[in-house]
Image (tube, rainbow, N blue to C red; front, side):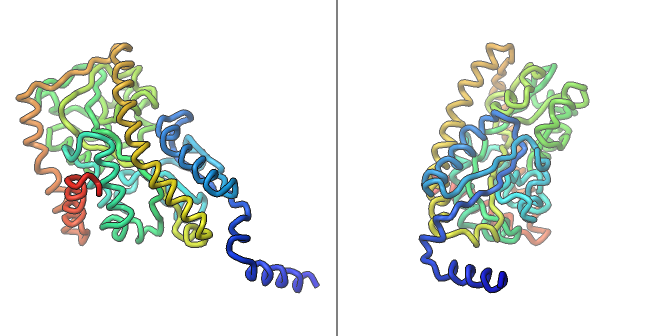
Length: 341
């Protein structure tokens, strides 16, 4: 009798209009590695979740697990793919073996603001080469992202004034393209996730970091660094929240529509706020004793010359492994030139 009732209920549910099914409550699990209060959670993730809930009249809600509660940054792709979480913050640099082409947005000298990088990556990862070659094979779908403002060199002791000052410096990177960037300048890349940087720098096992300004504060590194460069882009980093493709495919059409609209709305808004807050944070860091040292013109010219070949070296290495890196690089450069359109 119970079995018949279950089947009857299921048959009834399938016969209901789509709008009735879509009105049912849906709770999704979201996870990342950011500490509580991180500026990207405040500017990007929470506004997006709130907007989706609002657009669905409260039908879709989220349970959020910050600060590596479910797993470390490098685990987020696997956790999202396996369904442990529905939506995960996936930093392509942390899984460069699975998403090497995404590092096209992390090459040095490509752009000057967060919004330039963000809008170009958005198109490539939602509709272009990266969507087909990175996201689809990994069975995830990009929901929203931000590309951080150009990274700078932050040091705990001596400041960087010349290319010679970079020689032998042990600096934290996210790996991949940033490793190529530092090696081109004679520095030593130390690959690690952002949450681990404080301990290594405090122990003196690193001389400094390649880091974005806001994250220096978010991870408490402003207590350790004394100098920061200005005038050269040393690459960037992609913060991408993605959903398990199977979960996405099962969502009602109106929920997909709400999520897509929320994503389109948050992209230009979040990156503009990131760019704006960077200037405010710089002043606060200066007031706290961090010295921002504009690189001399001769140093800027020399460094930019040394870094010109990093993009081609990166693409060539991946092309030789059967990846479409040159195609990804051309598409990204074209999107930057077109303003991400």
